[in-house]
Image (cartoon, rainbow, N blue to C red; front, side, top):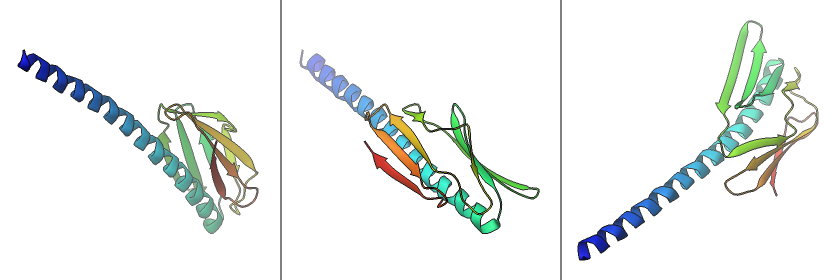
Length: 135
């Protein structure tokens, strides 16, 4: 009887740990993706400004693509959007960055299904600066 009770306690604790681990991994993946998005956004704007070339940010159903081109040389960065995140507003299919590293103002809203928060990214007009706020 003791063995059965011990085994059931051990199995319960193991199942609980595995569930928490998966949740933790999803949260880490979400945070890493949001940091990648901000860093890629800033580096694309900086590249366009420093190299006097145009660029764009493309919102696909499954990923966001940052694209710059200079003559025959092109750079593309993309990453798959985690399943826990959803872009709900402000995501035009193609967001253009001009040669001076400037773009029109926009607000991009990303919702998280893990913590039920909305993350607002405000792109300031002609600055290439992105401001993050949570609600």
